[in-house]
Image (cartoon, rainbow, N blue to C red; front, side, top):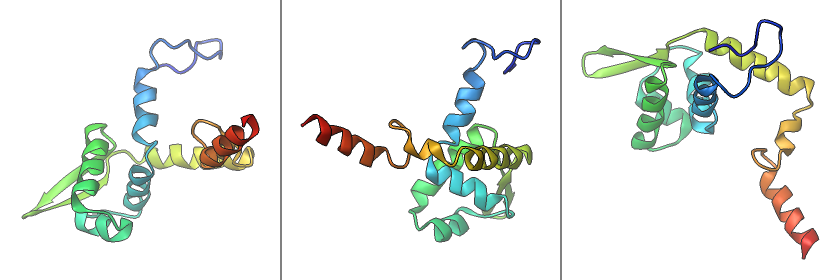
Amino acid sequence: MAMNHGDGCPAGAEGLDPAVALFHSLSDATRLAIVHRLACGEARVVDLMAGLGLAQSTVSAHVACLRDCGLVMGRPQGRQVFYSLARPELMDLLASAETLLAATGNAVALCPNYGTDSTTANEVSTEVRA
């Protein structure tokens, strides 16, 4: 997947599907929390459940998604599976994202489609139209 042409200009939409899938796999708050937890070391689903306060089925589904994307791997030990990050580069990506968020003053939080304040923005927008 080439994100840039040789001249440094961004590529068109062609060939971006893997990047779209990567960012989509990290776009869920639970999956992102799992990745952050696994950055500290191996964990079982039961360990992740305790930290997230979610049901086993929910955590297992999110871990399976991350595993299917090649971001997490499991190490069976007896009847347990210990999960860890498959690629340490993932933490470099997240560190870059945090740097970008800091540089923009977390402006993405105001995005009307995906921002954390999108519910409030949509309610204000609806009130203005009324």
